[in-house]
Length: 153
Image (cartoon, rainbow, N blue to C red; front, side, top):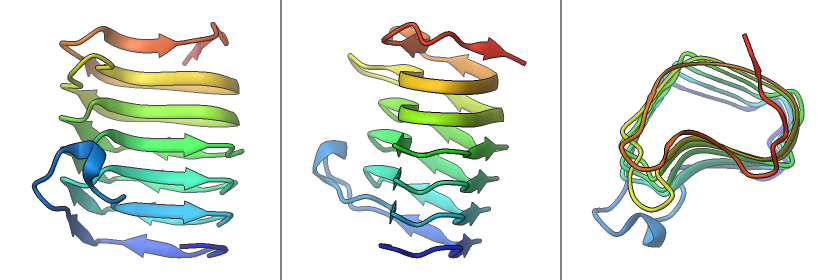
């Protein structure tokens, strides 16, 4: 969606094609869509759930598996990401160039491959996080490329 302010996607199933994760389309994409709500959805075998320039979004109670980046946020402010189950992705959650992001009570597990992170941070300011089970057989749970400083709740 583009310029979909205050849009809601709830209780939907999104199933991608059985292709390499980098060759799939995004399961959910929001661009310049402030105040969106993605709640209680299931996404499998799509590339990403991605939000660009979409401030004040709520991402809650979703199940996301089999993709590249489970949840991917770029240039977003005031995000709340809670109660999601994100598994079997290359990266569970990747936050880039965002601020005032709250990531709480998410189960992030089984990230794989060379990037295999549960949580990736690339300049993020005002991050408050509490992860449950960031067990990733790749490189480990949290990758903070620029040492932004993670405040653990």
